Length: 553
Image (cartoon, rainbow, N blue to C red; front, top):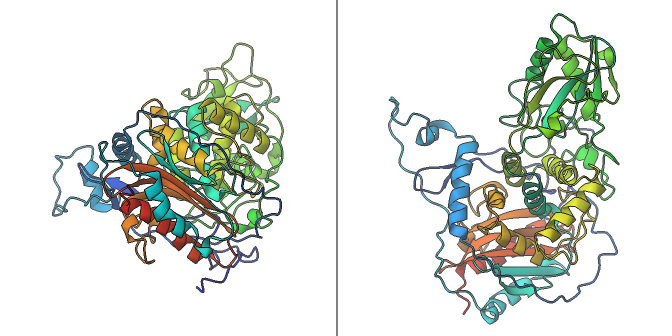
């Protein structure tokens, strides 16, 4: 693929992903497994990433404004947090092949296969006693790299000491910049704060206004599957829900399915999304009820995937088939109010099943639950899943009593970030995925968010590190840090979320210096030429790699 060529996915070719540059952060992250006493190991090779494109950065992006540097000291032990998070990831990711034996429920079980060698650690160790890089030293190393013309006309940078929260270097650090998919870091932190890591999103079925009428009520779970196996591992199943409904109805046969997706309000597509998002395979109509992230084919790989045009009605028709109801008896409406004194599933996410004998209008007939939010956050970050990003942003809105819309989610996320004491100057949010070009986030907000997530004061936020790709090893960074001159030092030491739209390239994450000091960093640029993706990525990687080699004193 010529690196100067940007291709768009074509709506006329729905049977598979087009070829071209992997934009829109629809990249896939390999599953990581963790062996005892070792770092993550590489799983089976992923399919190639998908393709996207879009117009240039909109006019009206504000000029760079200086901002007083924010200082906050956090008693952080990032190394311990990362070890804990990696251990948790090992429990929830797919464990391919013989590697599963390392974490098997019965390690003493006999096996005819020869034992495999222990996996090799890939993440650099940290040293809480390591010296902190000096600002002047960082400036001497980073200034020439930031001046690389491949990064376009606007490059904004922040570097923070992860152990203290002190900002060590910034260049336009407080300036809002189009962030692309690094927006998902803020979505992760705000939803874990607002809902908690263990929260599960319910999908319910209730009795309709007429006998035999079943109402399928969407709660915003984007991972819901039709059967036992869908696109997302561990997803709730409509088949399970249908079985609960049959039990609750006893001998009464369902005659009609009503689809209630009224939990979400406002437009189904964000106005700042590029025109080809609905057909480009990386976004979808956002509805409170959908199957497999609105994919037409749940077996489609990560990245590009054709999406259905009416996710809620598609799910309703699938539910009707499972109940033996004709598809022409599926319609959209609002569920009847629950009977007085009943408990709604949204207030009791741990509940399942239906009250015995309760079949009056609005009575719950069944409920299924999504995987816990910590797993959804991990998938969102590791796979850069835009649909999950939007769904989680709406969970922030719901937790704060705001409308579950693009605007309500943006307002609620901003509120949570402010309450966490994070610097929101220059922040403008329009969505939770980063697909919108109306988003503006400062590098300083990103580095301080990462430092806060590593703080023992907020253990519920540490899960955001589990999904971060590792340089030269996994996910969006698997093929980076090594092939481009000046980047090899970042392999195994850089762990970061990437962001890509046409003209927009960003990276934010954690890096360990050569002496073992953990740093958080963010580099955002939103005026790169449309044909400059590969040079811009190389320039970003050289900056992160320089931090990995830096004593900078």
